[in-house]
Amino acid sequence: MLENLSMFGFRALWSPWFFLCLVAIAVLYFMFIKNPTKKQRILFITSLVSLYIVKGSPVDLLGHLNFSIHMIQMSVLYLILPPLFLLSIPSGYYRKLLSIKAVSRPFLFLTKPLFAVLLFNGVFSIYHYPVIFDGIKTNTILHASVTIFIFITAIIMWWPLVCPLPEYRKLSGLQKLAYIFADGMLLTPACALIIFSGVPIYETYTNPAAWAKALELCVPASMLANIDINSVQMFSWLSPYDDQQLGGVIMKIMQEISYGYTLGAVFYQWVREEKRKEQQQTAIYPSPQPLK
Picture 1 (cartoon, rainbow, N blue to C red):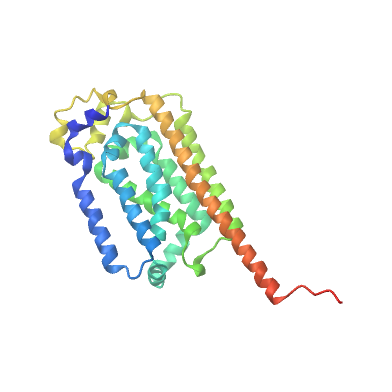
Picture 2: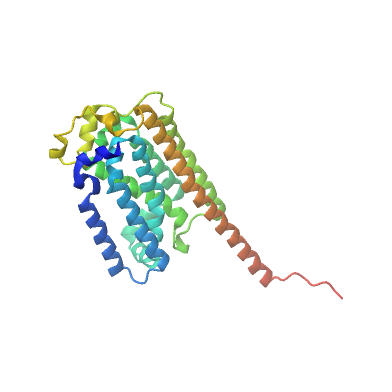
């Protein structure tokens, strides 16, 4: 199957313009972001490399051919990249940005934990409703706009968990645990719809005409003219329904891994903070010594 991808050409497979844009962003980061830590530099480069892999490499083309690969893209874009990106920027830049009232007021409203978790999961679930999904996947401008919009909602959703500014942290350790649990539960219905639908529900991956239209997002029209649109199964290793089920399972597993890691990190930080507070209290109010 993979050898058949060569027919789409270098531009469709490797997205050279997208690669150059990411290189330019990296150059701007190292030119204008002052004194990032080594960890922040590594996180930023990791986020750019991951972004290129899922949106610029042959993985992006495969995502238009196989729903399961598309869900790997979604998992990386919305469950892995946002916290990497947020943590790669020195906290001073967030503080300066949030000192602007026109920015801070809407941002602080949007990042209220309850609103943030409902916004991301609501938008993500609506996006995967079959009619909406097929409409977005066959419109270049709409697809790009919705992808960016969901990424923004993912940033908003992750902010209460990884906020680098102590004065803007709204959740305690225990509340963060509850937030992650709620996040996982709210994404479950969308995954269940995909896994247990009983039939293929996305025309983009079953209807040759819709499939060809979706490919226009990443393949030049001149190249598509030479491809038989009835050969959709030529690029898949599974039946459409099995591919769809696998995609739902992948999304759920990736969610569990991402949230599970975050859950462990939050729990560890919470326990460490409680121990620190206990030590401070002991230093201020030492235990009484027994009389000799």
